[in-house]
Image (cartoon, rainbow, N blue to C red; front, side, top):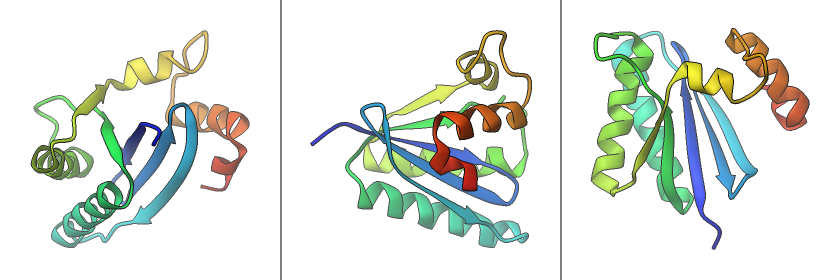
Length: 128
């Protein structure tokens, strides 16, 4: 069995998972979330549980949020942290600037630029 890493991307209305076996993208899925926070949080929790139970996940990659951040995405991250703790799955924190620096030189400046680069490198993701 190859090691698997799942990276979650959290937005106001979406959660995306990307599962990597070694360095190859093996699966991805995007879920749209409700406008109502409690329903969205329940969806995030269910989706994360399904992901870590359906795949032999050995680690989770997640964007780090500053402690004062009270955005929906930051609050969703709290649910992922709880699930990871109960399942004993380590979390690898990635700062947004670090992510931007890792994709191009000079570094990308926005998520739009990052998406463009990713869609060129991994054409399957261009439809997302």
